[in-house]
Image (cartoon, rainbow, N blue to C red; front, side, top):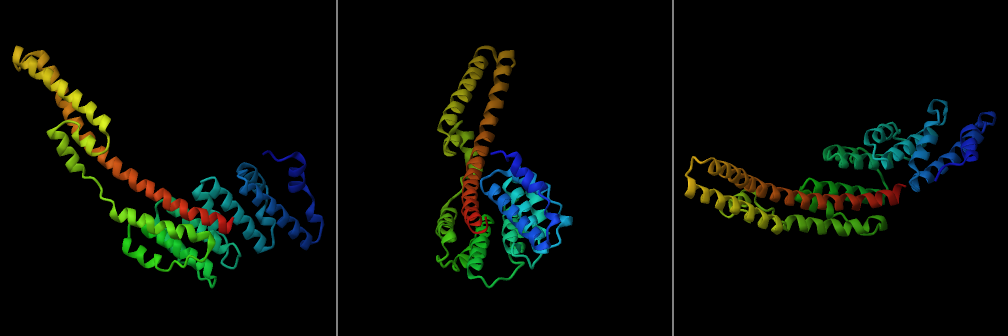
Length: 292
């Protein structure tokens, strides 16, 4: 969606400065609601354009100024611009209505950067009497514990789940399932994969779950070994063909061992990344439900 000329004209150039302060404030709030709507429907460029045309230095009301900074931070958050997003979230005063929500968004930014301790510090940096927010904080901290693979801490924090706050119920049910998957999952051994492929070329790939690649490695390495041996029998070890095929065989044989070991590493990493993405999604959904 593109903003129409009349909307831009009204929002940017309507001379609210000619009216009393109370009218100016209500007009700004109305415009901020429209910008928030643009962010909700993912019209981020339009929202960014309008926000950049607001001069914060001309805003006297600190609550409105904080609301503008929050919207700027939230828009950058939606654009995955973490540094810019955090810059504005950090500027929001502790007395602002947006202070706690800005801290949750900022904490999620640090989770995306895998700076989990920074995220924990931000979440523990405020107090609240709101039981729902306290429940959400426990959910966030338990998710961070899982991302860090700190199972003892997760069990303590997840024990605080009460399953009464609708935006967090699904995540409260899902996180313990991920915990069980992680706890019961056994990573395959890179050393064993390499050893298996050293004995039988390609077997380590099969162990890593890549049967097709394992079969291909076996055929290639075996064919090169057979060709090298055949030339050795016919022409001797110093023959140029024997040396050539022997060199190619050695390269493929060693590559098959290393490839098998790294296939296992990739498989283990993919499992962990999949679980991490699910954890992050499960706390991102209530974040948007509660604070958007």
